Length: 502
Ligand code: MV4
Image (cartoon, rainbow, N blue to C red; front, side):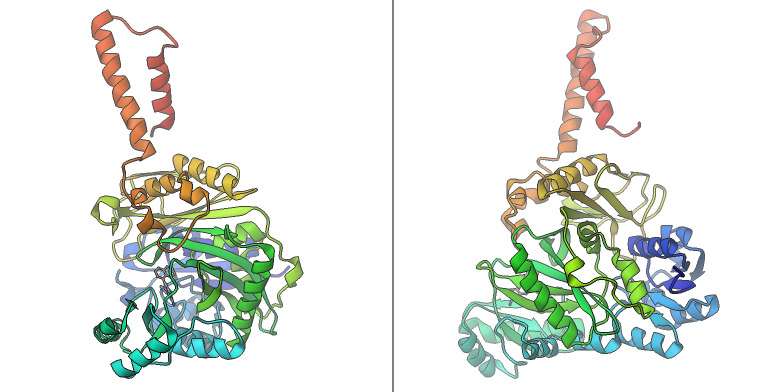
């Protein structure tokens, strides 16, 4: 089949730029990369057919510059732009500027982005469309009105910013006495973070799961869902591990929340790949939270379970292609888990810890997918998100996917920067994780997972240190090497197998 575009520009960097480039090359589309001065040697620049410098390292002067990116589209002759995630991916002005410049924006129409960008507006739209939303209030004018609204909803309630996201401006309120001061705090935070102090109330859902439904919609009004992802394992609103399907969702529930998501997408005129984020209460009720109008970091777990390339689907839809699948052709198979490999320092409160990667070994083998944006020798810039790669494993069932992840994490070596690898390795054998007993407070409830106490790699080092000490003493006592096949030798073999240079 002829490619839908001759040439496509990727307005992003890192692993997601590489991911989009891979889809393009499989489709026979030529690729144009853009890069900041900090990314001259980045992987996405090496993989693309062409690459253009767009300015200094700060993203406000490079990856967020609509004018520079559209200038490159013009100079290179790219017919379409894929924004990846982050940066300009949910920027309505960028989608409009692409439209005005005659460049195809690979994503939803700006009108759909606008409808979902504002919380109060999207809540209203969803509830009119018959999609369940958490009981809540209109925008709050003052403390008196807030107290009356909270009384009606019932405590505990949650203050949220209408322009919000990522938990900014959120405050849990357990009684009317604390509402006035928390309202002030929430408004102040909303104003400083989003330049809009509009806040509203919702019933506070305790110990919820974060479950999101992937949808695909074409320009002719067809829309399907590709089941759910469970993203409950997060720290400070940053997702760390995602999986598909959710361990608590059966086929009937999947059909129900899938229909909710399709309804949500249709109500805002959605086109392209999108995600409807829901909260599942401990008692099993689902509520619409927000719609992410972009390709998400965790899209690979859905791809693994449904056997569909979402990036290729986005590109085909943007070129005016009709969805080639009906809902009944969308069948999940097995289970997939994703771990975000982040350059961060557990001993410094998980601060980003960029630096130069001295050596990198990616895992492979059955059921393993490695989506990376770096290589050995690359210096991870301090200016951007410190995620280095995503490791995704597939298994016939959840246990196999988790065992494969543990094995793949053991194979993965990143030398030179501190990473989240050891954390992920601990989670993969943790009883609560293996039981599927997840909720958004999972890591607060299991703080031992965040500390290095049971690092299996440190355990290997301890074995080696003991072996060295024993071997030295043994040599001094006997003045000769140990016999072949002794336990000392086998410890060395074990150490060697687990070690670096092979
Ligand atoms: C909630 C909630 C409980 N009740 N809304 C946080 C960010 C935003 N996307 C939605 N968030 C929440 N909204 C009600 N009515 C709990 C959270 C929440 C959360 C949601 C998803 C993933 C992680 C979270 C961590 C803390 C709080």
